[in-house]
Length: 354
Ligand SMILES: [Zn+2]
Image 1 (tube, rainbow, N blue to C red):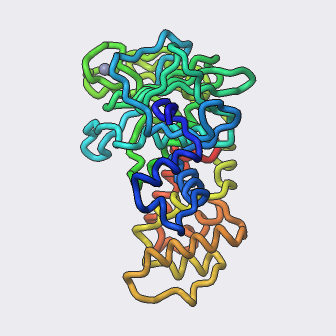
Image 2 (image 1 turned 60 degrees about the vertical axis):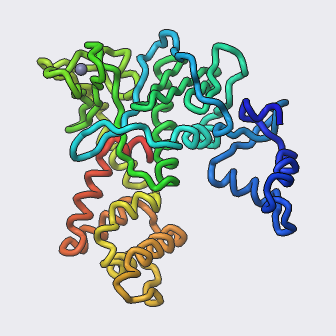
Image 3 (image 1 turned 90 degrees about the vertical axis):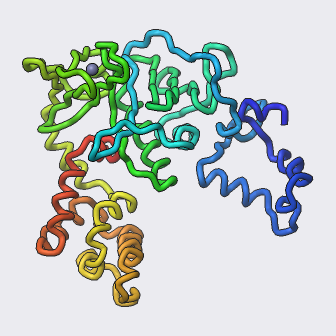
């Protein structure tokens, strides 16, 4: 129990819980099932060779009380800001999202990510945490929940920043999906004008990145130390607007993306408004549809099943295929096609699938 304040625990913690809650003493209660469930939900992560416990649960950590800050890093910190899409109002970081994102990061398989040692230069709070992330060498990723945004510091060479951003984006997207939240967050930088509450929000259009200040009349100037988070070419300064040119093989990026396997969550989001056409979609994708209940209330569920069957079929499960289906049935799926093309050319899609 004593290490729980540091987020660590062992299976025997549930022995202790038996005396507190009747649920845990029922004969049906299987400890292994509970652990599996908590792992599956990304509420806990399993640790290898950690003296203090076999599992880590960031929810058990205290919040930071003292101010937290990180020394200068090569790349300026990246900010993740939640924003109402239409009104552009800045929203608080969704409650509960931060610890879930941490566990998603620890559980991802693309890069080795571990909890930092318990020493003073590393943070271990439920709202500020330092992780060790290994590329060729070990580097530190500090994540701080400032409640109006998440601040991201990476101590390693800037060449790794785009990948770090991609891992983080995936972790936030997966956590948002698990919590049924909108993906209404944007990347930003602290405004160099030091104006209170001004964010330099990063946008992407016509193959270039640019920033827009939320408060300043004219957007501030952003240095190379910021753009390191966004892979691709040198910065081109055009008048007051700052842009970053995307590498030439951008169209080949597009092609690569079209060959990737879509995730059900993205398909559902893009097609939900056209769920009534599940029969067309399913037939065009060559999956069984004649057993689906025909009443209108079942359309969304049927659409989910259609996509599940398609993904399970492993039959040309690519963005290219589903885009072709939209083109073949433009009359019914024209709007979806437009949304789909928009999504596929977005930074979000690039970060998630490439
Ligand atoms: Zn500004």
